[in-house]
Image 1 (cartoon, rainbow, N blue to C red):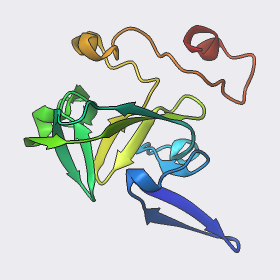
Image 2 (image 1 turned 120 degrees about the horizontal axis):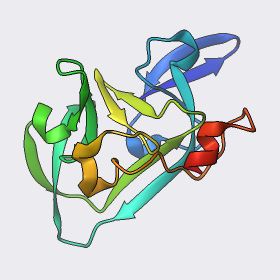
Image 3 (image 1 turned 30 degrees about the vertical axis):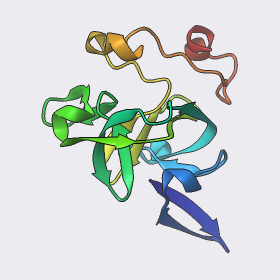
Image 4 (image 1 turned 90 degrees about the vertical axis):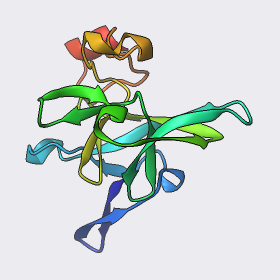
Length: 154
């Protein structure tokens, strides 16, 4: 993950591993719109994995793995696809997997050169198994209330 660091009036992006992310960090979203390039993490959702259970994962580089069925943006096909479609799948023992919820309505995170879905993204009907096809459910409201999107999603 790339995190925006603001210090002494200067800004710089610094790489961080998932284990080092905290609510409040500004992460790169992968958006090309200047106003949407960074979003603050509002909540990190851990999901514990049963001891000894192997999880199918895809290495996105930079020490970041996503589950093979996690939605990632395919610029080649201009749609959300499962990570296992764009990368090699391996089985690993992972004690915890995480989901990120971001402020506002830009619900993507840039990992290396891959745009990954964060909590809140509607990825289309092909993602029924993960619930990414139902709605854009969230637990936090954006800063611009009242908001029609929040009224549907929260």
